[in-house]
Each structure stands twice: as structure tokens, then as C-alpha cells.
Length: 458
Image (cartoon, rainbow, N blue to C red; front, top):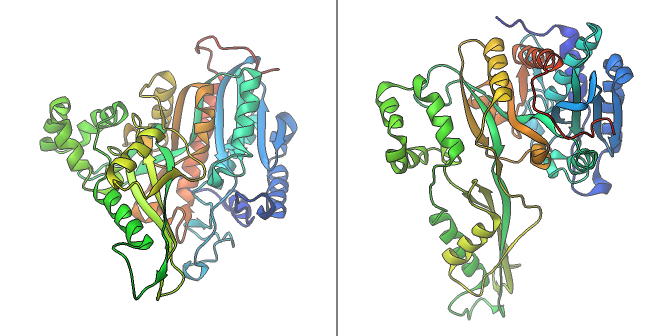
């Protein structure tokens, strides 16, 4: 049974949570002092890491290279991010969100789960390995972005391109995304570890309408606000079709043994029963995201006064794109469903196509085995991250991509990510450190990977 982390280890994470590293897509609004504070804390807390590993900075992002005995071979690229999202209402928190409170059970604060715990856990594991005199057989990169929450343009994008220009090709890319859920998967009593194999795409579609305007006492047949409202309603009422992807089919086949008998039999006919299974999965938001490109109207604007017909109205609709769909098919769907040539339809801001490899292999098996060792009794399956992570920028740089952290979470924990009362238990943090310690030990002795492109020592 995993023992909770001690006070000194918990305090190192808590000190990182006190650094208010809120990311911003406006460069002038980035809290430089907070990132500088976090940098100093990391360098003070992990002296061997910063003495033995090469460190390159890309803004506030940090790319470490741990040279292996065979430096031109790359075992892994381990990703995590230092930035956090803002806090909407601090008064609703049990403890102030950036106070870094540690009690007997939890480490509290924004970033405790997403994602400073992974930054610190990786560094804890590498520091321990260096203390023990371990040197990896093949090179390991650690890439800690500073703007993941705003798409990674100046952090992960630059670090990934830097590695690409070096010709780096790793056996494993590991990032956040999957966890071990407890009481979340309907019908399964044992905890389920979901090692994600990629992520959905991302697109925000902007709908806009321009009208003549005028006095509200003499409206025409339709107003700008009415047209936008109708367009949004049509998109929400007519979502994109349900579909079983190879990743989801693999996920279901792996959890089949843990299901009740009746459901197990249904999954045994997954090829024939796919339409029924996808409809069942669509009944819950958490599982609907696995079988559909989701539609989420998030912003609607229009009008300046109650008695003035608006000349302009617009709405933003966010789509998370299932593999097999694309940004182009989302736009085509919007035009087909809205059926109004007066509504302009275009993408807004950053977009990304889905990235998923429906393949497993030795590296996936290694991650699964370590997860079982750290948290005995779990069922291990695959999946796809419904949100966006930095790993999409590195997707072509590794033979195997996994998104996973071995923390056991329930619905309350999931709701706290980007929400209220984000916290990580001492036991979960110990699991996270132990997982990375075991991973590094495995990677340090790994010599069975396929030949790679040279460039790690460039």
C-alpha cells in the first residue's frame, strides 16, 4: 500500500502552488515574476537535476536533456506544464487557491492536479535517480511548458520544433490526460486506469450576422439576435453523428472483463452492436465525448439597448473533434445545419486537428505494468483525451504516445480541475512520484527499442 508523501516532499509541491503562474495568450499579461519565482524554487529544490542535466529555456518553458550512455538514442520525452488557469471565485475555496496549504491528507491549490504535481513528481524521481547514481542508457528529455492552458504557442510549439530540427525521435512521449477513475465508469466497481493514446481536435466556430438595425417598435421578420439564436439552437439540436473509433473500440474491449455479464456479452458483439453501444455511451457527457465530435455553444453577443434593433450579433461554438472528423468537416456540418446564408461561419482563434494512434506496444505495456504495480487491482484500458494538451505539438516525435498519470480520482476531483478546491492527496502524490521513479528505472535499463534517427546529441 502506497504511503503518503512526507512533509518536506509535500511542501516542495505546495511552494510551487504558491507561485501564481497564470498563463495568458497576451504576452504583456504573463506574470513573469511568478514564473521566475517558480524557476528559482525548482533549481533550489532539485540541485542534482540542475547540475547534471542540460537546460534550455524557451521563454519560461524549460527543456531538460538527460544524456544517456548512448546519447544519440532517445528513450522518452516526458511532458508537463507549469502554468495554471485563473480562479473564478476565490471565496468559494476551502483554502485560498494560491496559498499552497498542506494538511494531513491533501495538498491544496490551483495546479495541484493540473499540472504542477507532474512537473515536481518528475523532478523528484530524476533527483532520486541521480542520488542513486543512475544514468539512462538512452537520452531522456523533460519538457515543461509555460503556456499549455493557452495552446502552447510560445512554449511547447517552440520546444517541439527545436527537437524536430535536431532529428529527435523517441520511443515514448508521455503527458497528462488519463488518470485512474473510481466510481466514474458505470457498472465497473474496480478502479479503471485510462492510458490515453491521443486527443480530440479543437475548433471554435464563430457565427455572425449583420442587419440594418432600427427601432424595436418596428421590427422586421427577423433580427440579428434572432438569427444567431436560431443558428445556435440548430447546432445544439443537431450534433455531429455518433461514431465508434478504433481507439474507443479498443478501450471497450479492454474493460470488457470488468463489466457485469450482460454488458460483457453486448461488447462481445461490438462490431454488430456498435450503433447501440454508441447510443448508450451518448447518454452521459463523459462517455458521449468518446463517440462524437461534441458541440458546445459558449458565447453569444448582440444588441446595445432593449429598444434598439441590433445591427450585429455573434456566437462562439466550441467543438472537440473526434478522430476521423476534421476542422473542415466541422465547418461543413455547421453550414449544412444552420441553413442560413446570412450567417457567416468561420473558425475563431487557435484550432487543432485530432491526433490519435490506435496502437499499443511495448511502451504502452510498460506504462500499464507500472500503473498496476503502483495501484494494484486496477483495470487498464485505452482512450482519447477529450481536451487539448501540449503533447499534440510533439505527436510526430515518438513511436508511442501515452497520456496518463497514476492518480486515483473521483467525480469531485475531476470537477476541481479548472474548478473550485483543486487538491491532490498526499497518497496520490506519492503514487505519482513512485510511478515516475519506476518509469525512469525502466527507461534507464531499456536497450530493446528500434533504431532511431540520430540527433539527440546535436
